[in-house]
Image (cartoon, rainbow, N blue to C red; front, side):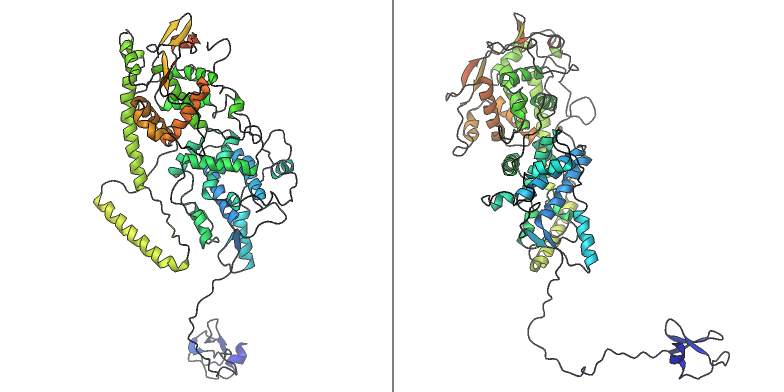
Length: 598
């Protein structure tokens, strides 16, 4: 090749006078004898011009719009599957067992895909999709699909029920008898089958209940608010190949966290839609059972450990000691229990029984307790109220400030139409400039930095940073007395609002209209536990009414009816009651040990 290009050049070399030329990789001539490089280069003939290159093209007045490149078409369920995977991984990092993701949540997700006809069926629905980014080649498309589909929930071969044997049997049990059938009938509504961000939390809540984890729905929502579980900006973790555009992108974009009531309602709808089998029983040793769950709330509220004994007495009277009341069964008991609200309502009813909470009885009992000699070891309602009220006000202010400073917008720009990109970019730039100015003028931190995840709202003890001294070791000798070998509360009467149940479809909560007439101590106690669970006060008030119906078994329209409690609330005196040892673990009342005389 070099001889053909250098054949026409016969000039001698200036260094050695030889005529032996070659062409380097850069296309320049050099002498093969002395390797002298000269400025002459190889001539390149451009063959891009053809014989018809002298044609004149007509220029039209139509705007030249670049068409969007077509890429892999992603299904909406694939996007939600990726978000569910990230949420499950976040819970695993917080200490949830790995079986929660592989054996429970994965199977529920497969069942949802089959019931909604989006997967595991012969004729899946293909209109629930959005266009992904354009890819350069088939290899890139395969690798992009593998990044999402191959890294999804693993098939561990385990089963949800311990009686099942193999993964095939588990899939067949959860996906129905006909695995390749079209799923449910055409009568179901599309709105019930379409997955939303709120339903991802509901599905995770059902999986946590099935796994009998120590995370209630209020705990899950608090982890979401603190950013430990991705939700508001979960769309930012989607792969780059998934481009959110069009109205479908709004399904992944949320600017608020749903309430406890809405997520529980969505979970109840999913139970009916998925037709789930009977859940594993909530035994008394499970942390979702009212016995251990109420002990946790008593500790968080800085109440005496001895009070848990009376909570178990009322729990037994309400018939809540039976594990069937707390186990979800799609056929026999299709109602999903609200475990956290039930435990809080049980504590409130117990405090009403022990202290009255009518703005008079609790203070009269306190005056009688002041006459005892060992007042230092006895529980004081006034001291407890002042201590918890100060911590409650400070925690409420801290929560309001964190909510006001929370960034509800993600770092990535979100827009439905590409034509809105410039507007969204300008708004983001203005917002960042305003935040920078406020940061310079204010001494408060702009960003919200949450600490480690915790199941408690308050910290009681003598350590630095605690909310106050602990009252868990105090005794209830000032509000109970020994009568005929039985420990009986000194409070004789129990007041209650009307307990006649209303139709939830036609009647709303009566708490807003009744709140001005309720005793202030009872309203304050409702606000305390509402803050601990992060629910509305009326929502917890309705659960308290339901708990009173179970405990007393009456339906009366009278307001403030008095019931005599001494006749039926009596427990046998035991060593744990005499010593009041908080280290001794309280146990659920059993026959022969703790009795209720009616």
